[in-house]
Length: 380
Image (cartoon, rainbow, N blue to C red; front, top):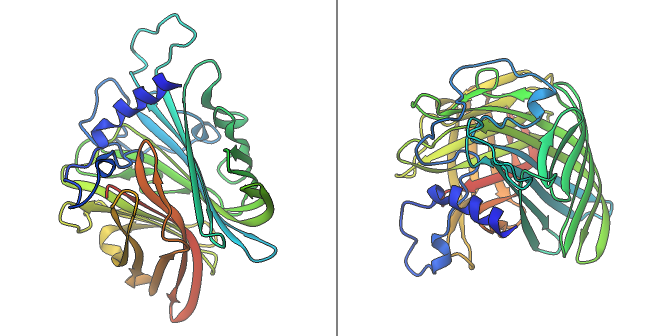
């Protein structure tokens, strides 16, 4: 798999930070930050572009869209055991095209235009442990891919598979590494939520700087988690995020904070805060507030007030991340405090970013509310 890893590393080279690491940082801190949700760098020719709205089509859109430069399947969630232990998990699959479909194919069975990467991480709050792993594969010889129907996405033996359409999903999730493993059954409690304009989500003023984006924002999860040889039965709630595009971050946008939150009143909140070089939120930041009946309220940058409250610095990479946040939507009388279950949930692999389980408290129209979810911090 070394060739696949090198190919993907080259594709991600454009995601390197454009500012120098802080004083005292070691060489590792200059490694690429994640640029997988919205690849930075100039848009490439020959790939399809997300230029206008279209109706999402299921189950087709759960599968791969190889005509676009990149796409991803994100599964995150919070799990509890009967004895009160809390866990977070992330299992994500990324496809990045090395060349457009129009290029001449090679005859070798190993030849492929698609490179795949998967990340797997578990947060053990009681044990104060965060474990992560990654895998690479080429999209050939059955090593990695995404198909429908039935739905399946996999990189080697890490996979999510089952049946899904716009209203329902019943999926089996499986991944294991040397020290930790996860086996879950996921059932959609809420239907697909299409973000932006029917799934057409604009990220900047440039033509084609957009993605097709939807989520299953609430999946009931049940199964087992294993850490250092100890297996535990768990149950909880998961989130699935899907995007595909041939997009680029606008000049001056260095990264983002992404929130996927399930609230105790049955609603869900997704918001991404695109961070400009001066630290302020870009005007193309956005998200969705999803009602209990599945109605999606589109959120624009001006609808959401977001402020970092506390920071944490990684002892490995010397990178500082804003881990505690205040998120408010004044028109909905919703004010939330977000804080991590564990500070050190930094994924420091081929690409580096912070993604971890968070807990939420606050008020909604004067009443107390709580929740949980996941926070992703990229470009730091």
